[in-house]
Image (cartoon, rainbow, N blue to C red; front, side):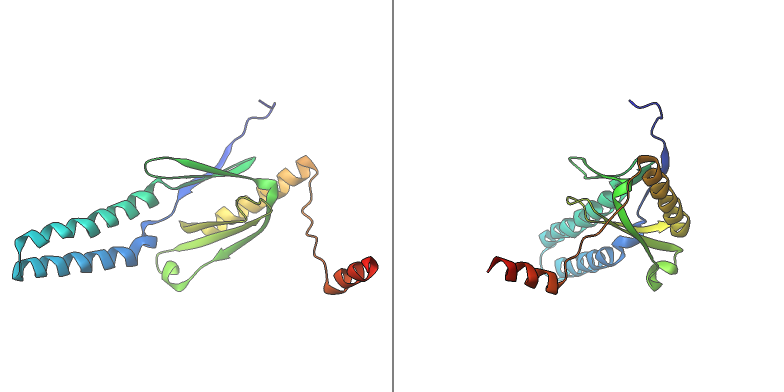
Length: 172
């Protein structure tokens, strides 16, 4: 372990509002099945358990997905039966974007989208969190501090069409 201990800067999870429309659809299907079982066969009512368990699975999945960013990295814990942990080193974050769609602004929530240079996780979407502006600012400052500490800079290499043509022309 290094001389400095890794500290948690922010830890949180998405709000359950991200499941609003699937939950509404599940409720409508449950109502439809209950009405159908009333008019036809009472055994049809057992089918209402399927959308009920689906809605519970969605809510539990959102509840168990935890975002944690420390002084060194961003960790995403997800999974219901088996927990999966994704990590991205903070110095690999290229761009941070804050999105505040109307639906989320009503509830005081926002999305934070991170573009990274990590091939396994090129985009991290932290959906429906409170205090998105403060979280994004903490994250941005921590990324810059870590880059200065490690003396790392993010550089994008993009080739233009004229360079590729010149290279191919040189081979001919």
